[in-house]
Length: 425
RNA sequence: GGAGAGGUGUCCGAGCGGUUGAAGGAGGCGGUCUUGAAAACCGCUGACGGGGUAACUCGUCCGUGGGUUCGAAUCCCACCCUCUCCGCCA
Image 1 (cartoon, helix red, strand yellow):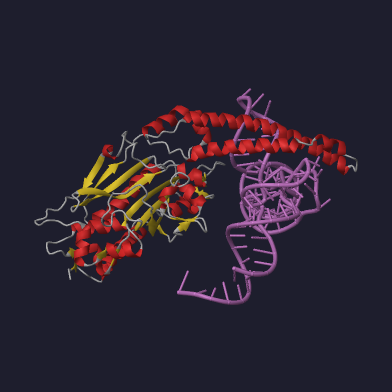
Image 2: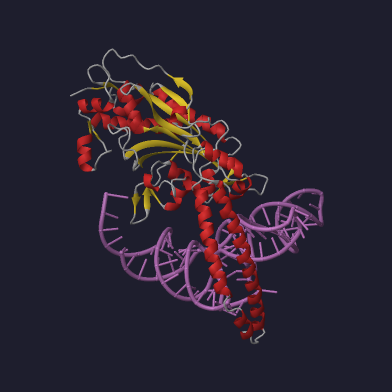
């Protein structure tokens, strides 16, 4: 969330960012609440100061073993009055806080202005889409023909937006995940992590999923746990409430986890195949960075995600999300879109964002500045490195052959017992 | 799941319902002493919010949330977490 004092003193700048995001939020609402809170605070604190004084006097009298009943009688009703004001104050504070928690992040100056995804500019392209001398299939067709992907039985087990994959295809998904993790751990020095896949409310609030986006999450009411929609949530919250060492920044983590999304409101979108499921796997990168160089870390992290696509020889492009399309917590985001010949378009496979101190403030993650008493908030960044299910889709569609078989990308072969081709039955 | 113990400041650790924001240590910072260092001694050493140009001042915070009281770290209730033992379990 944004800093309360910053919002108060930069109302115009905040409103401008909200407008660029197509948000309907009005800073005037915040302003009114803030003023109300401050005047109530003064009122109640004056009363409390008075009460504390009288109580101290009573204490003195009692210690002198004298009778204080007269003074005690005089304070009757004071507690009630304070309590009533405290309740009012708590209500206003709650409203103000809810406003702040529901307010999206500011925007980096380099984030392009735009209404929606159609306005996202392309930054660069890598690779050349392959020319096929036969009609290309989409991945679900390939999977079904190979007998290695089964959506009907998955629907029987769970419902729509679930998948079953088998044998070489299942193994290839595992190979992809292992390969990604190995690259990030041995080449990028990320700390491999196995985090909880269910987290509590505070954790979801720390990264910005709650309170605003509850409908996107799976919730276990018994324990009040939420299934993670991305490993960004547990990883970013690792240092919640802690003070990190400046010398340790930037500090990066990665994790291979399932991700659970309710996909409410996506009816009719990507209803076929592996593109949009309630459950998928993703290798996620999260960095805690120094505010001075977090944008360099963003470039580096994006390059790390790109490296995976390059090693798999999958053509992709990098786009910058515009102000109307960028996520709630981010000030700047690059999306990597991989070429899917079956769909004849580029599709999102990674999203790399700098959230600056937006999440750090929510989750209270600071660092001790050396040679100073200050404890500034860190900057947090997150990026997919990559979405494993969608990478499998990209490999299937890009590596398909005329006879319906799939060539196994070279870098994956060591993870698949040397297998070079996945043959149809 | 059952039985018990406990959660206090950077850390350890006290705390009869009333000068306790919190004893006493340790650590850190500054100083005295010293050729230098150590030791010893002295002082300082939390966060957040409100008011004030400022010096400063007021309020809140002893796991979390409620309650009792003129007054709660201290009493009551609920919840969370940690530890020990038993049971169950991959």
